[in-house]
Amino acid sequence: MTPKVLLDPAIQIGADLAKWLEIGGGQGLRAAISDPAGAIPTVAEAGLRGMGGAGFPTARKWEMLAAQEGADKVIVCNGNEDEPGTFKDRHLLEHTPHAVVEGGLIAAVATGANQIYFYINPHHTKGLAAMRRAVEQWLVHDLLQSAQAAIGKSIRLSVVESSGLYIGGEETAVISTIEGGFPFPRKKPPFPAQSGVFGAPTVINNVETLANLPHILRRGAAWYRGLGLGEAVGTKLYSLSGDVLRPGLYELPMGTSLHDLVFVHGGGMLSGKEFKAVFTGGPSNTLLTKKDLDVALDFDSVRARNSRLGTGAMIVISEGTSIVRKIVEYMEFFANGSCGQCPPCKSGTYQMSRILGRIDAGDGAEGDLAALENLCRILPGCGRCALIDGAVTVVESSLSTFRGEYISQLRSRD
Ligand SMILES: Cc1cc2nc3c(=O)[nH]c(=O)nc-3n(C[C@H](O)[C@H](O)[C@H](O)COP(=O)(O)O)c2cc1C
Image (tube, rainbow, N blue to C red; front, side, top):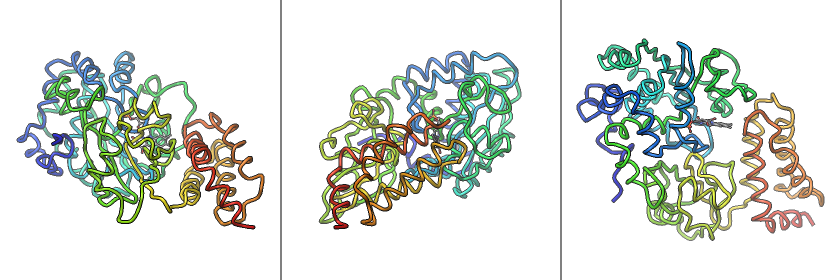
């Protein structure tokens, strides 16, 4: 039986700080306060990686921020979560908001940051309300004063609403939004750790990343590492959806196999359906198929299959579901979600969406597959952010894995 950390029923208490402290909350922050210099090494030793998509080691990001000079440094908690199939952060914001706030404070103590923004998607109304209530309680609690004393700075906590747009979750778009602008991603460098919100060095961490911190600081790196399977560390929230019997949010050891997630925890496929493929980490990665059911769902093992764990979203589809139709849906999402700032991204996603739509409708032309392949060759790296790269990856992957379906769709017009 997996020990639950983030989804432990005992901590799903909503925004009641007294209760959070009663059940062991606050101890992680106290540990960081008593030894601020030890916090980053503990997080490094735990092997915590970013849960917002890229899986970048959290301690490495923090080291860059800690090394920056200057009075103002910023931590942003990224709670935009708008990708199809991902529904983990909204749960944490609503049900364990104090773990998220405490995680932000631990990050501030570890890096010397004096501003923390909880950047929340306004469509997650319950999570937003719970975070507002949670922050109000921390603002008048002694523990905040102790954290301030530990770094010799007063720490400002604020809850800000994102635009609710998908692109608003990209880290430099997060910065633009907090500064009051449209969520346009920015060119890098400078990287946020050099110049972020209003020019101050900034670290952006996902909600799930921050929510792990109170537990790691309280119980130690070895405890956290021991939760994972094999080389993997900790637990992971997997958002399981699609043609499975029991879709939902699962917290399992990092490194649980795709087979076990779908067939043991998810109860298997809907009656009469057979597993065909899974969109991993949302719709912007390489598809995994039957031959990948044995893959361990952790950052490195999924990477070794040329895909990405991403946010841990797993959208399962069954035989009989048209892959072309699914890709059309996702490409419409990307075309609508492109901010329009980089012409290759705006016109490339629109063009791919048009071509895919006509193939799906049975109106495809002979040269359409070659046109899609050409776009997949020229578009990667053409945008300021990774939106276009994700859109290309899923098209390319579907074309190489399920080419036969595209061809029979083209032939269906005859
Ligand atoms: C188009 C786009 C949308 C993104 N949306 C989110 C989001 O909603 N939440 C999130 O945490 N990260 C999102 N990311 C990833 C962030 O840019 C960033 O890597 C992440 O917040 C860092 O946190 P972490 O290191 O804890 O994973 C998005 C990236 C892209 C390219």
